[in-house]
Image (cartoon, rainbow, N blue to C red; front, side, top):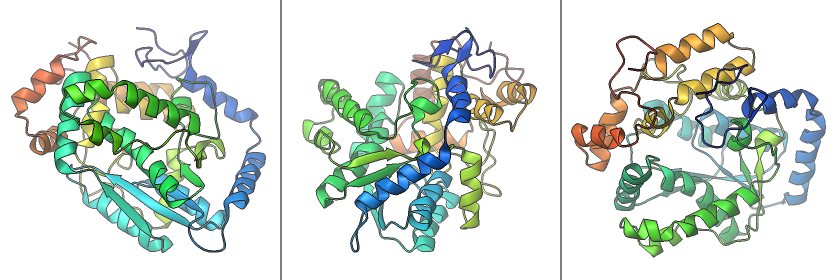
Length: 358
Protein backbone atom coordinates (compact mmCIF):
# COMPACT_ATOMS: atom_id res chain seq x y z
CA UNK A 1 0.00 0.00 0.00
CA UNK A 2 1.36 3.43 -1.00
CA UNK A 3 0.36 6.44 1.09
CA UNK A 4 0.38 10.12 0.16
CA UNK A 5 3.53 11.76 1.50
CA UNK A 6 1.54 14.81 2.63
CA UNK A 7 -1.74 13.50 4.09
CA UNK A 8 -1.18 9.74 4.35
CA UNK A 9 -4.15 8.77 2.16
CA UNK A 10 -3.75 5.21 0.80
CA UNK A 11 -3.65 4.41 -2.90
CA UNK A 12 -6.40 1.81 -2.45
CA UNK A 13 -9.11 4.36 -3.29
CA UNK A 14 -10.24 3.38 -6.83
CA UNK A 15 -9.06 5.93 -9.36
CA UNK A 16 -7.04 8.04 -6.92
CA UNK A 17 -4.39 10.06 -8.74
CA UNK A 18 -0.80 10.02 -7.47
CA UNK A 19 1.97 12.31 -8.74
CA UNK A 20 5.46 12.15 -7.21
CA UNK A 21 4.11 10.54 -4.07
CA UNK A 22 1.33 13.09 -3.57
CA UNK A 23 -2.36 12.20 -3.89
CA UNK A 24 -4.78 14.00 -6.18
CA UNK A 25 -6.76 15.42 -3.27
CA UNK A 26 -3.69 17.22 -1.94
CA UNK A 27 -2.69 18.40 -5.41
CA UNK A 28 -6.16 19.79 -6.10
CA UNK A 29 -6.35 21.44 -2.68
CA UNK A 30 -3.02 23.21 -3.23
CA UNK A 31 -4.28 24.52 -6.57
CA UNK A 32 -7.00 26.43 -4.71
CA UNK A 33 -4.37 29.02 -3.75
CA UNK A 34 -4.08 29.99 -7.44
CA UNK A 35 -7.81 30.56 -7.95
CA UNK A 36 -9.40 34.01 -8.04
CA UNK A 37 -12.42 33.23 -5.88
CA UNK A 38 -13.93 36.69 -6.27
CA UNK A 39 -13.91 36.22 -10.03
CA UNK A 40 -15.61 32.85 -9.67
CA UNK A 41 -18.25 34.31 -7.36
CA UNK A 42 -18.86 36.93 -10.03
CA UNK A 43 -19.27 34.15 -12.60
CA UNK A 44 -21.89 32.55 -10.37
CA UNK A 45 -23.74 35.87 -10.14
CA UNK A 46 -23.73 36.11 -13.93
CA UNK A 47 -25.12 32.58 -14.25
CA UNK A 48 -27.86 33.32 -11.75
CA UNK A 49 -28.76 36.53 -13.60
CA UNK A 50 -29.21 34.48 -16.77
CA UNK A 51 -31.79 32.24 -15.07
CA UNK A 52 -33.45 34.72 -12.72
CA UNK A 53 -37.24 35.00 -12.96
CA UNK A 54 -39.66 37.58 -11.59
CA UNK A 55 -42.03 34.81 -10.52
CA UNK A 56 -41.89 31.05 -10.15
CA UNK A 57 -38.85 28.90 -9.51
CA UNK A 58 -35.65 30.06 -11.16
CA UNK A 59 -33.51 27.21 -9.84
CA UNK A 60 -33.69 23.90 -8.00
CA UNK A 61 -31.51 22.81 -5.08
CA UNK A 62 -31.27 19.16 -4.00
CA UNK A 63 -31.03 19.14 -0.19
CA UNK A 64 -30.74 16.59 2.59
CA UNK A 65 -30.89 19.10 5.43
CA UNK A 66 -27.17 18.73 6.12
CA UNK A 67 -24.72 21.57 6.70
CA UNK A 68 -23.89 21.72 2.97
CA UNK A 69 -27.59 22.14 2.17
CA UNK A 70 -27.71 25.17 4.45
CA UNK A 71 -24.67 26.70 2.76
CA UNK A 72 -26.17 26.14 -0.70
CA UNK A 73 -29.53 27.65 0.20
CA UNK A 74 -27.96 30.57 2.08
CA UNK A 75 -25.74 31.40 -0.89
CA UNK A 76 -28.41 31.05 -3.56
CA UNK A 77 -31.16 32.84 -1.62
CA UNK A 78 -29.39 35.41 0.55
CA UNK A 79 -26.41 36.26 -1.65
CA UNK A 80 -27.72 35.56 -5.16
CA UNK A 81 -31.35 36.57 -4.59
CA UNK A 82 -32.78 33.51 -6.32
CA UNK A 83 -36.08 31.70 -5.71
CA UNK A 84 -35.33 27.96 -5.55
CA UNK A 85 -37.44 24.85 -5.20
CA UNK A 86 -35.88 22.45 -2.69
CA UNK A 87 -35.90 18.71 -3.44
CA UNK A 88 -35.02 15.79 -1.16
CA UNK A 89 -34.64 12.13 -2.15
CA UNK A 90 -35.14 9.99 0.97
CA UNK A 91 -34.28 6.46 2.03
CA UNK A 92 -36.09 3.95 4.25
CA UNK A 93 -33.59 3.91 7.10
CA UNK A 94 -34.33 5.34 10.55
CA UNK A 95 -33.72 9.07 10.49
CA UNK A 96 -32.00 10.78 13.38
CA UNK A 97 -33.76 13.45 15.40
CA UNK A 98 -31.11 15.95 14.38
CA UNK A 99 -31.54 15.07 10.72
CA UNK A 100 -35.33 15.42 10.83
CA UNK A 101 -35.03 18.75 12.66
CA UNK A 102 -32.43 20.11 10.26
CA UNK A 103 -34.51 19.46 7.14
CA UNK A 104 -37.68 20.96 8.65
CA UNK A 105 -35.72 23.90 9.98
CA UNK A 106 -34.04 24.56 6.62
CA UNK A 107 -37.38 24.75 4.84
CA UNK A 108 -38.90 26.93 7.57
CA UNK A 109 -36.03 29.36 8.10
CA UNK A 110 -35.74 30.17 4.39
CA UNK A 111 -39.53 30.00 3.79
CA UNK A 112 -39.19 27.84 0.70
CA UNK A 113 -41.28 25.20 -1.01
CA UNK A 114 -39.98 21.67 -0.78
CA UNK A 115 -40.56 18.52 -2.83
CA UNK A 116 -39.80 15.18 -1.14
CA UNK A 117 -39.26 12.13 -3.34
CA UNK A 118 -39.51 8.84 -1.47
CA UNK A 119 -38.41 5.69 -3.25
CA UNK A 120 -40.96 2.97 -2.50
CA UNK A 121 -39.88 0.85 0.45
CA UNK A 122 -40.12 -2.36 -1.57
CA UNK A 123 -37.90 -1.00 -4.36
CA UNK A 124 -35.48 0.47 -1.82
CA UNK A 125 -35.11 -2.89 -0.08
CA UNK A 126 -34.67 -4.90 -3.28
CA UNK A 127 -32.23 -2.45 -4.88
CA UNK A 128 -30.19 -1.97 -1.71
CA UNK A 129 -29.96 -5.69 -0.99
CA UNK A 130 -28.88 -6.36 -4.59
CA UNK A 131 -26.21 -3.66 -4.50
CA UNK A 132 -24.94 -4.68 -1.06
CA UNK A 133 -24.67 -8.37 -1.92
CA UNK A 134 -23.43 -7.92 -5.48
CA UNK A 135 -21.04 -4.97 -5.30
CA UNK A 136 -20.55 -3.92 -1.69
CA UNK A 137 -21.86 -0.45 -2.58
CA UNK A 138 -25.11 -0.75 -0.67
CA UNK A 139 -26.69 2.56 -1.59
CA UNK A 140 -25.58 2.88 -5.21
CA UNK A 141 -29.19 2.94 -6.50
CA UNK A 142 -30.20 5.62 -3.97
CA UNK A 143 -27.01 7.62 -4.56
CA UNK A 144 -27.82 7.70 -8.26
CA UNK A 145 -31.36 8.83 -7.52
CA UNK A 146 -30.09 11.68 -5.33
CA UNK A 147 -28.48 13.13 -8.47
CA UNK A 148 -30.86 12.03 -11.20
CA UNK A 149 -34.29 12.67 -9.63
CA UNK A 150 -33.78 16.41 -8.97
CA UNK A 151 -32.46 16.83 -12.51
CA UNK A 152 -35.44 14.91 -13.89
CA UNK A 153 -37.82 17.10 -11.90
CA UNK A 154 -36.12 20.28 -13.12
CA UNK A 155 -36.56 19.09 -16.70
CA UNK A 156 -40.25 18.32 -16.13
CA UNK A 157 -40.90 21.72 -14.50
CA UNK A 158 -38.86 23.73 -16.98
CA UNK A 159 -36.35 24.91 -14.36
CA UNK A 160 -33.10 25.77 -16.10
CA UNK A 161 -30.63 25.72 -13.20
CA UNK A 162 -29.83 22.98 -10.65
CA UNK A 163 -27.28 23.58 -7.87
CA UNK A 164 -25.33 20.77 -6.21
CA UNK A 165 -22.61 21.06 -3.59
CA UNK A 166 -19.18 19.56 -4.05
CA UNK A 167 -17.59 17.87 -7.01
CA UNK A 168 -16.55 14.82 -5.00
CA UNK A 169 -14.30 13.42 -7.76
CA UNK A 170 -12.23 16.61 -7.67
CA UNK A 171 -12.36 17.05 -3.89
CA UNK A 172 -11.20 13.47 -3.24
CA UNK A 173 -8.57 13.41 -5.96
CA UNK A 174 -9.89 10.99 -8.57
CA UNK A 175 -10.12 13.77 -11.15
CA UNK A 176 -8.16 16.93 -11.97
CA UNK A 177 -11.17 18.60 -13.61
CA UNK A 178 -12.51 21.41 -11.43
CA UNK A 179 -15.66 21.71 -13.45
CA UNK A 180 -18.35 24.32 -12.94
CA UNK A 181 -20.97 22.09 -14.55
CA UNK A 182 -22.05 18.61 -13.52
CA UNK A 183 -23.89 17.87 -16.77
CA UNK A 184 -21.16 15.67 -18.22
CA UNK A 185 -20.88 13.65 -15.01
CA UNK A 186 -24.65 13.23 -14.83
CA UNK A 187 -24.83 12.04 -18.42
CA UNK A 188 -22.02 9.59 -17.68
CA UNK A 189 -24.01 8.38 -14.67
CA UNK A 190 -27.08 7.80 -16.85
CA UNK A 191 -24.89 5.90 -19.30
CA UNK A 192 -23.54 3.71 -16.48
CA UNK A 193 -27.06 2.98 -15.24
CA UNK A 194 -28.10 1.98 -18.75
CA UNK A 195 -25.05 -0.28 -19.06
CA UNK A 196 -25.94 -2.00 -15.80
CA UNK A 197 -29.64 -2.38 -16.62
CA UNK A 198 -29.34 -6.11 -17.38
CA UNK A 199 -27.57 -6.67 -14.07
CA UNK A 200 -30.28 -4.83 -12.13
CA UNK A 201 -32.95 -6.79 -14.01
CA UNK A 202 -31.23 -10.05 -13.07
CA UNK A 203 -31.35 -8.98 -9.42
CA UNK A 204 -35.09 -8.32 -9.42
CA UNK A 205 -35.24 -4.63 -10.33
CA UNK A 206 -37.47 -4.14 -13.37
CA UNK A 207 -36.63 -1.96 -16.35
CA UNK A 208 -39.53 0.32 -15.41
CA UNK A 209 -37.99 0.79 -11.96
CA UNK A 210 -34.62 1.60 -13.50
CA UNK A 211 -36.33 4.05 -15.86
CA UNK A 212 -37.97 5.74 -12.85
CA UNK A 213 -34.65 7.36 -11.91
CA UNK A 214 -33.37 8.15 -15.42
CA UNK A 215 -33.61 11.74 -16.71
CA UNK A 216 -33.56 12.47 -20.41
CA UNK A 217 -30.16 13.02 -22.00
CA UNK A 218 -28.63 15.31 -22.93
CA UNK A 219 -29.31 16.98 -19.58
CA UNK A 220 -31.17 20.20 -20.39
CA UNK A 221 -30.82 22.28 -17.20
CA UNK A 222 -27.45 23.75 -16.31
CA UNK A 223 -26.28 21.70 -13.32
CA UNK A 224 -23.68 23.43 -11.16
CA UNK A 225 -21.10 22.32 -8.62
CA UNK A 226 -21.03 25.03 -5.97
CA UNK A 227 -17.54 23.86 -4.94
CA UNK A 228 -16.26 25.40 -8.20
CA UNK A 229 -17.29 28.86 -7.04
CA UNK A 230 -16.28 28.78 -3.36
CA UNK A 231 -13.34 27.18 -1.49
CA UNK A 232 -15.34 24.20 -0.25
CA UNK A 233 -15.07 23.34 3.44
CA UNK A 234 -17.51 21.36 5.55
CA UNK A 235 -16.29 23.26 8.62
CA UNK A 236 -17.09 26.62 7.01
CA UNK A 237 -20.44 25.26 5.84
CA UNK A 238 -21.19 24.11 9.39
CA UNK A 239 -20.58 27.61 10.71
CA UNK A 240 -23.10 29.00 8.22
CA UNK A 241 -25.62 26.25 9.01
CA UNK A 242 -25.43 26.77 12.76
CA UNK A 243 -26.35 30.43 12.34
CA UNK A 244 -29.72 29.15 11.09
CA UNK A 245 -30.24 26.56 13.84
CA UNK A 246 -28.55 23.47 12.43
CA UNK A 247 -28.11 20.71 15.02
CA UNK A 248 -25.26 18.24 15.29
CA UNK A 249 -25.60 14.79 16.88
CA UNK A 250 -24.34 16.11 20.21
CA UNK A 251 -26.47 14.66 23.00
CA UNK A 252 -28.26 12.26 20.64
CA UNK A 253 -25.70 9.80 19.29
CA UNK A 254 -22.03 9.44 20.18
CA UNK A 255 -21.10 7.62 16.98
CA UNK A 256 -18.19 5.22 16.71
CA UNK A 257 -16.29 5.06 13.45
CA UNK A 258 -16.33 8.82 12.95
CA UNK A 259 -14.18 11.77 14.00
CA UNK A 260 -16.96 14.38 14.10
CA UNK A 261 -20.70 14.66 14.82
CA UNK A 262 -22.05 16.73 11.93
CA UNK A 263 -21.20 14.94 8.65
CA UNK A 264 -23.74 12.53 7.07
CA UNK A 265 -26.01 12.52 10.13
CA UNK A 266 -29.44 12.19 8.52
CA UNK A 267 -30.02 8.46 8.99
CA UNK A 268 -28.56 5.72 11.15
CA UNK A 269 -27.74 3.00 8.63
CA UNK A 270 -26.15 5.33 6.09
CA UNK A 271 -22.91 4.75 8.00
CA UNK A 272 -22.83 1.24 6.50
CA UNK A 273 -22.43 2.66 2.99
CA UNK A 274 -19.47 4.72 4.21
CA UNK A 275 -17.90 2.00 6.36
CA UNK A 276 -17.99 -0.67 3.64
CA UNK A 277 -14.91 0.95 2.09
CA UNK A 278 -12.92 -0.33 5.07
CA UNK A 279 -13.19 -4.09 4.44
CA UNK A 280 -12.79 -3.48 0.70
CA UNK A 281 -10.03 -0.88 0.57
CA UNK A 282 -8.58 -0.54 4.06
CA UNK A 283 -9.97 2.91 4.86
CA UNK A 284 -13.34 4.53 5.43
CA UNK A 285 -14.94 7.89 6.18
CA UNK A 286 -12.60 8.72 9.07
CA UNK A 287 -9.67 8.78 6.63
CA UNK A 288 -11.68 10.92 4.21
CA UNK A 289 -12.51 13.51 6.86
CA UNK A 290 -9.28 13.54 8.86
CA UNK A 291 -7.12 14.04 5.75
CA UNK A 292 -9.38 16.89 4.64
CA UNK A 293 -8.94 18.56 8.03
CA UNK A 294 -5.20 18.12 7.64
CA UNK A 295 -5.19 19.85 4.23
CA UNK A 296 -7.24 22.70 5.66
CA UNK A 297 -4.73 23.22 8.48
CA UNK A 298 -7.17 22.11 11.17
CA UNK A 299 -5.14 19.03 12.14
CA UNK A 300 -1.47 18.18 12.26
CA UNK A 301 -0.21 15.05 10.50
CA UNK A 302 0.28 13.42 13.90
CA UNK A 303 -3.28 14.23 14.96
CA UNK A 304 -4.63 12.98 11.64
CA UNK A 305 -2.75 9.68 11.87
CA UNK A 306 -3.88 9.20 15.47
CA UNK A 307 -7.56 9.76 14.67
CA UNK A 308 -7.40 7.33 11.77
CA UNK A 309 -5.62 4.68 13.85
CA UNK A 310 -8.14 4.96 16.68
CA UNK A 311 -11.39 5.15 14.71
CA UNK A 312 -11.12 4.11 11.05
CA UNK A 313 -11.77 0.43 11.77
CA UNK A 314 -14.81 1.07 13.97
CA UNK A 315 -18.45 0.56 13.08
CA UNK A 316 -21.09 1.88 15.44
CA UNK A 317 -23.49 -0.96 16.38
CA UNK A 318 -26.55 1.22 15.79
CA UNK A 319 -25.79 1.36 12.05
CA UNK A 320 -25.77 -2.39 11.25
CA UNK A 321 -28.76 -2.91 13.53
CA UNK A 322 -30.84 -0.40 11.57
CA UNK A 323 -29.44 -1.68 8.26
CA UNK A 324 -30.39 -5.28 9.06
CA UNK A 325 -33.83 -4.42 10.45
CA UNK A 326 -34.69 -2.30 7.40
CA UNK A 327 -33.45 -4.80 4.81
CA UNK A 328 -34.35 -8.06 6.55
CA UNK A 329 -30.90 -9.47 7.34
CA UNK A 330 -29.76 -11.30 10.42
CA UNK A 331 -26.48 -10.17 11.96
CA UNK A 332 -24.86 -13.41 10.82
CA UNK A 333 -25.99 -12.84 7.23
CA UNK A 334 -24.67 -9.28 7.31
CA UNK A 335 -21.24 -10.37 8.56
CA UNK A 336 -21.04 -13.17 5.99
CA UNK A 337 -21.76 -10.78 3.11
CA UNK A 338 -19.25 -8.22 4.36
CA UNK A 339 -16.54 -10.86 4.50
CA UNK A 340 -16.98 -11.61 0.80
CA UNK A 341 -15.67 -8.09 0.08
CA UNK A 342 -12.76 -8.27 2.50
CA UNK A 343 -10.18 -7.60 -0.21
CA UNK A 344 -7.94 -5.68 2.17
CA UNK A 345 -7.71 -8.82 4.36
CA UNK A 346 -8.96 -6.83 7.31
CA UNK A 347 -10.79 -8.67 10.02
CA UNK A 348 -14.45 -7.74 10.48
CA UNK A 349 -14.22 -7.67 14.26
CA UNK A 350 -12.61 -4.77 16.06
CA UNK A 351 -8.82 -5.24 16.33
CA UNK A 352 -7.35 -5.76 19.77
CA UNK A 353 -5.38 -2.56 19.48
CA UNK A 354 -6.85 0.51 17.82
CA UNK A 355 -5.66 0.91 14.28
CA UNK A 356 -3.90 -2.48 14.04
CA UNK A 357 -5.31 -4.71 11.31
CA UNK A 358 -5.15 -8.39 12.30
